[in-house]
Length: 465
Image 1 (cartoon, helix red, strand yellow):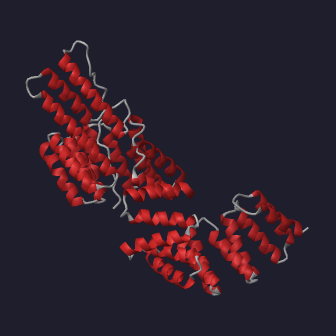
Image 2 (tube, rainbow, N blue to C red):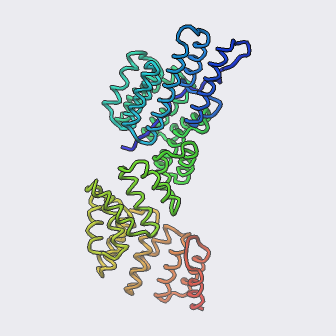
Image 3 (cartoon, rainbow, N blue to C red):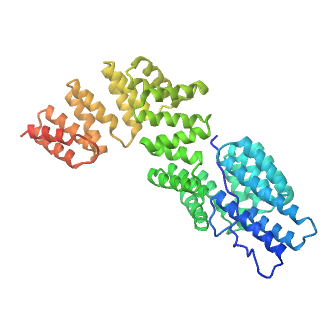
């Protein structure tokens, strides 16, 4: 389960911390509170326009200590300082996916903060991140015992039910929280998660955007938007959202992982390496890094990563399929075929694996199996023309020009703006003797999009004159 985290802070006005009329003891205590507030804001990436309840608690206890210098105020301030530091450390560990260490830090914070509702909610978030419904619900019991109708109590139960994918039950508690605190950003963060699980993209987006209006740099809301856009799908919007999350939380492994999967080249490699370094036992991140290396033609390194994944997760279909792709790239066709087939047994809709298996058949001189596999790959790609163009080229190499034309007509129907599809279709027309139409499509290729050797296309066009 990929850990997810939320930031349970309230949007509160900046407290008036120092007044000139205060006696020196009060001024000193409040000055110390300012320092703690500043440190917490810097640690959490919050904007100066809001402070969280933990920070507010520091300010209040500092004030109380100053007004009651003979009642152990210094010790109270020290305890509040320690609790705030422990909470900040626990949240950082939670975001990094170090759940055991986060739980220890947040337990300490809860003790130091007098078992406040916010501190107990923070502690429950460890179990939300782990996806453990039973432990999450048990973690909510102390909140409910203290204040069953409080906002954090209701949000805690909503999150517990979301770990169990019980959106209807979660919605009951979100509604209660929203009624009690209609302006609180945490309510809309959980509402955004809920609506995303329910498949209500518009409501989910609106909820996350409401959080961002209150906290423009909130990484959790940006991350939630990124996850939403992956479902839509809108890769461009998802990329933008994950970038924004990383600007606010640069060391967040989950955001690094998601953005790494959406990008390519050195950027993808760097992001995925950082994610894996933070969480070395994360098989999905190791697999994604292998895919990035394979795309970057670092085939041997990719193969090593895929084998490492399979050592820990021998039944992971995607890892078998990607290992097959790495083996095909190295010309090890027999072992590639075995791995690709095993991967496709578990993930029959894997277009990349289906396409690579077709290439294995073609390179093994098994044309009928190759054409059938290319058709299957094309059906999985739905909108792309990669498999159709490859099938057309393979048919041309076998001088099966009519079959080639049939594949390529479908290719340009799907992707009329593809320079490659238009050029290969023109090759098929020229091979069948239709020079007039071949010229038309060579010209369309030169005007179309995508990487292609345009000088070579021009030479082929000139040769028909």
